[in-house]
Length: 82
Ligand SMILES: [Zn+2]
Image (cartoon, rainbow, N blue to C red; front, side, top):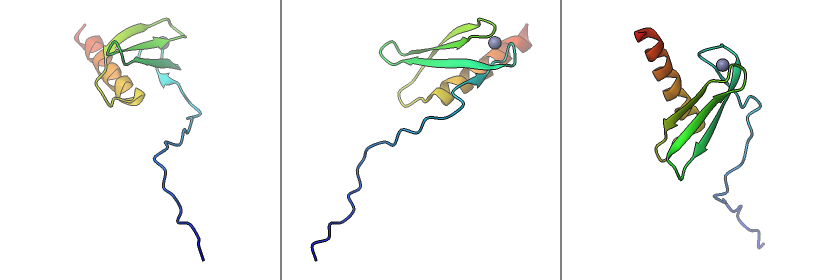
């Protein structure tokens, strides 16, 4: 029988996470959005609750979570050194 093998496609299944927002280190709300601008090599972190805006560097392969984690760490560091 000419049963075809299941083709494994390299297509990425787009699974949208329900909570697209990250926690803001300033106002503690889950209202941070991360916008990666690959062309410019930066990502814009925005909190729509308190208005915090930060621009951070992105490296190839960075996910929003990576960018957010880096931003969060550096923010906390800056807070502590003040
Ligand atoms: Zn905030």
